[in-house]
Image (cartoon, rainbow, N blue to C red):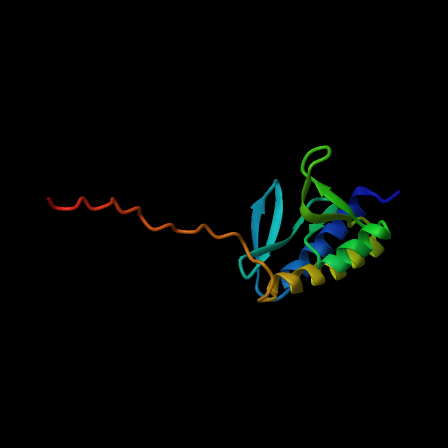
Length: 132
């Protein structure tokens, strides 16, 4: 069983790798650090896990091989198509960094749906009353 120190070391290694990726901005969200690129969140990091938005094919692969599980906000409520993977230990940390690189690349793709933007609706015009 890994000690608390090894978990912290893994966390620091994964954190440093995420920050070293191009054009990454870190914000505090969900009680964790969230990682963004081009205004799109691609990962957030807890003490013992990383949560990622992966390309669909890779997402399905990590779920099928049980390298990750769907990320749940409540007991059974999935958070979109995000997955959660352990980072404790050197093997898990290496896998997490590889998956994070895929999530980062997906978020940087121009054809990838970005953050939702609010549509600005034009003000309603009142119908003109015809002159009598």
